[in-house]
Image (cartoon, rainbow, N blue to C red):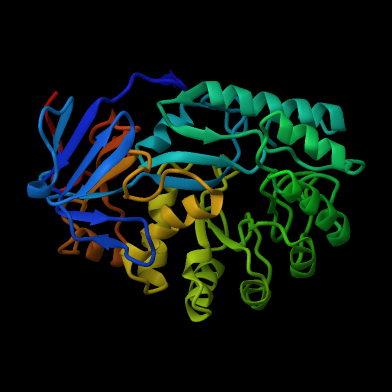
Length: 397
């Protein structure tokens, strides 16, 4: 159910007979290629089989005409320790999300820990512990970037310097703690940025006891790197204010599953109108009061493609390459040198769509047939998605 952070090397991996190759790159979302070669967890070649060295693979996979895409990235989760969430008293939620095609998760704060410390010494200790724990332990192989402290009154520049030196690279949602004023938040964002720590701000109404309303003016003044759940988590700002944030801020626009669906569609459309779709990233904001959503990212992709009338191949980039670039990750893109994290998909059986992309644009989630992380098969046919029309198979190695 879970693996240490240093799994066995994959050796040489060859994936052939790819029917549709989604790149994750929003400037070129579909690649003209049918073969991927990887070695020890990194992509070494992408192209046509005749032009690639496919000899002597450790693992040979026949994609059987299915779609291969970068593993999905959930930009907004709230882990605690291991594969357990006290929010819903549930074990195995990360492993279950793997079956939804997610290979990387990014913490927006370990806020659901019972008795979460809010004093400065305690919050720093929790962040460092979470960062260390998930760096050493990967549930089902999923990469969880954790250790995201919730900032509180009284923090000073040296606290951020200490956190960065200890390996912390994220801030939890600003606004979930006592810091809620724009000027105070802006100062902490500047200190975090100075030491290479990326910041996210809560947007919208309160989500848990202790959090509060963070309105558009606070978001703009704080100028955090990520406008966290711009469509609310759960309660959204007025649609007009959300569109104003898209227009007046140059920061990442994070749309989440556990938010206001109407406003999610409006935010995506506004990003397209402003010609900045590269700023849009996706998350689930789970575990939450509404539970754990193993298919949350796929559902969000299908919703935006179908109801916002966006090309499905572009929306998949929101959940892969866009997030990778904004979050400075080595995954999320199908290109040489990137992590060999892949999700194999096909249209769900009996979908009205004739192809995978058409089915998603009609609102159906695809069937996941296999997920790989670092070139290692982590699951075959998903137990959570509808069954795929066609499945990849491991034929050698």
